[in-house]
Image (cartoon, rainbow, N blue to C red):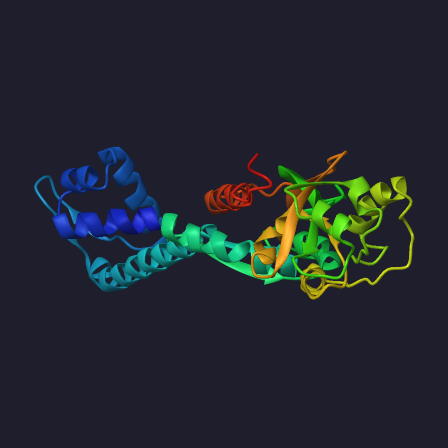
Length: 309
């Protein structure tokens, strides 16, 4: 037996209204269409459900026994359909985003606060992970999206460029570097040549961001030199504040830098842009929640003085 919800609706409408004409109007069917549904239902059940005369329609004994069952079945179906619809809406409005710890701690808090004010219907789950984990999380579907720079367009990965970020020089406000080099780093723009006499710290040489930086340091004779390195950008900023040295870093560190006694200036001559991407699985459509999040995230990055130029 394979009774459909449409057949149950037709049966219940006729049983309640005791009229094929009024029942057809009620469920927006033609009388012929409704009669066909009832005949198919009676054939599937192997029983006649209605006694019909030219003036009235009434339930048979089989119809009376079926009535409470049909009412319960249709009610339960409507209830579960409603809950599944709500679940689908909730899923569509929930976004899981992966990013490195510095992006999570320095950019995300303001983004999430702004998004809650503008779109309280959207829920964002943030996962702070190491950069090496991001591609696997996207491909497995554990996260809907990842954010960062220097991602390769690998198999199964789609990149959406959000904006281009400059490199910045982060230097301590108080340190023992010679007065001349120190003053040159306390400007809003810092030339690569200004770093010739300045002690530097940074990320490990294997880090893709550091490799871009080292390409420029090579031009001033400072690539592949021995220097103190840290795995985490947050650690680099904290160590700059203590006077370990200056560091060249992506511009999104500015949110973290605001909590430290450091100066930030854009690296120029040349300015080296780094593309910042949103990464998703190929074939996955961006939801309304994802687009709203990306718009808010990009706007927040553009709020930084060194980017809003």
